Image (cartoon, rainbow, N blue to C red; front, side, top):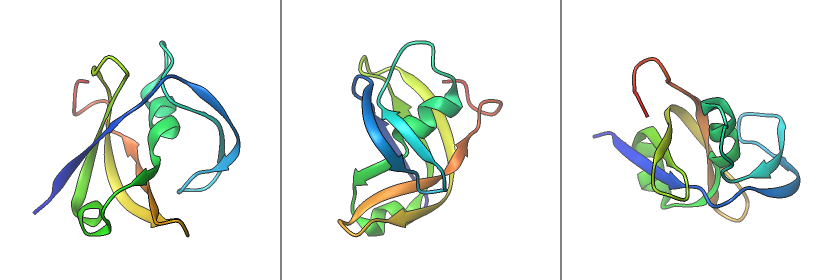
Length: 100
């Protein structure tokens, strides 16, 4: 059975060249008004404390801004585990199928 993971972003803050699960790096995490779905996904697709068994069952991710408004829906293709057991999701926003 597939599940949906919900990720709530805090306010935007700078990070120091943090590696992303699907490659590349980001310089910030969190929400800031005017972000595209792709920017939201990159700002919030990792690194979450999540039970590994549950993470594997998730097919969709719903990302909320600090006001609990859905700002991104993404299809999850995989996940990666960091040494500290935090999970990062690999996937991409699905803007055309779901209306945030």
